[in-house]
Amino acid sequence: GYNPVPGYNESVPMTDDALPGTQIHARWSSGDPTLATSGGTFTHGTKWGSYNGTLAVAALKASRIVFLKFDADGNLLWTHTPSELESYGRLRSVTVADNDDLLITTSNGSNGDYVLRVSPTG
Image (cartoon, rainbow, N blue to C red; front, side, top):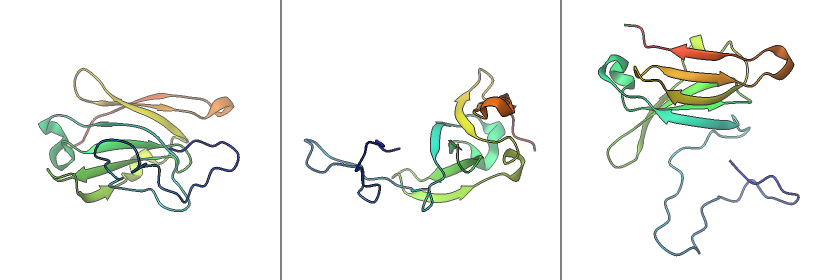
């Protein structure tokens, strides 16, 4: 995310190293042009298989979910975008349901909005 005030320079990283304490720089960037990421959560449970513990991130502009796998040190190992989650329009938020499924909301406005329940297949 960024603060879209007039004159804001998106090419400047958001991490301000002048702040007190240890600063942690981003481990992943959606690139140029941006995917316009908007919300995310970590997956939980063995039913997710290799996706267990991944960060599931919603993207408004790119209309998809991106799963990011990090190692114990926070280094990015891989990303994956399931094609099954690319046909619902702008995706706004991702949260975990009580049974560890993902609940994903859309943000399509007059085109209709949904709450999607996503369970891994396997």
